Amino acid sequence: MQPLSSPTVASRWLVVTDLDGTLLDHAYDFAAAAPLLRRLEQQGVPVVPCTSKTAEEVEQFQVTAGLSSPYIVENGGAIHFPHPEGWQVGTPHQPTPGGGVVMPLGWPGQRLRPLLDTLAADLGARFLALEDLSQGELMARTGLSAAGAALAARRRWSVPFVLAEDQAVAIEAVEAVATARGLKVLQGNRFAHLIAPGSDKGQALAALRRADPRRRAVLALGDSPNDMALLDRADHAIVVPGANGPHPRLQPAITAGVYQLASAPHAVGWADAVATWLALPTV
Image 1: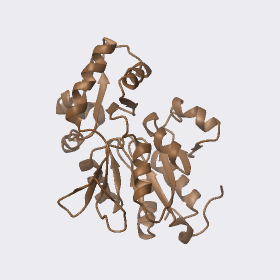
Image 2: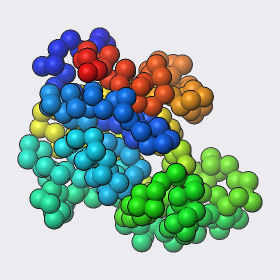
Image 3: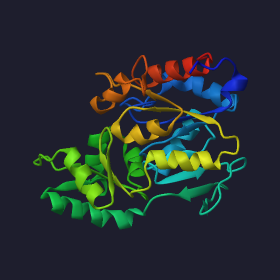
Image 4: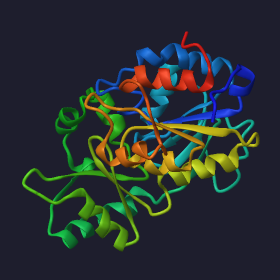
């Protein structure tokens, strides 16, 4: 498939992107991509965050980045449409105080939290859920400010967790036990995430496509295993590497040519890949 040649053609695309580790570096900076984000917004190319972050965290990012697009939160737990005009949201959906709507896709966190303890018991392991961490511990693990950590803790559709430091259970074993119980565990950069079986990023992308009356094609970008469902359902998939290269679990698809590899980590590689594919200047 050849890169697009004009803004008119580019407007037929949705750019659906992971945030942490992809567009944002580990200091949460995306300055290198900010001019391109503004240009895409001006030209009517939706940039849709698809992230493990909470709705409150993404709302803050949207304001900072100047985006008005829908966004997918908590690894596909829900889609938020801050400006639902022009989208076929359908039902079920819930109104939000600002005039937007949210489309739930996952299970409430209250339902998921006891199931994490069940998985731990199955494995004879000990997990630390994000909600069990003190604010100081969460700040230390994520590099977030106190205010940012408070937003990150407002989970509705997922249960992020880590293994206790004295545990030696492989994440693949946790994933397998979760699958056997009809659940999903996804590995992100800092946390693993327990989610409902039908609410990963790929399922959310499918729901977003159904809501898009223009039936635009999808350019997707991600960096970790929890992005694979998103990348696999996109029309064109790009892996943004970290400082030490792409995640090993994504390497086979890169080698096979299923995913393309961006030229540089984080916002620099993100902007280069998106601009090249859509044939748009970065400024």
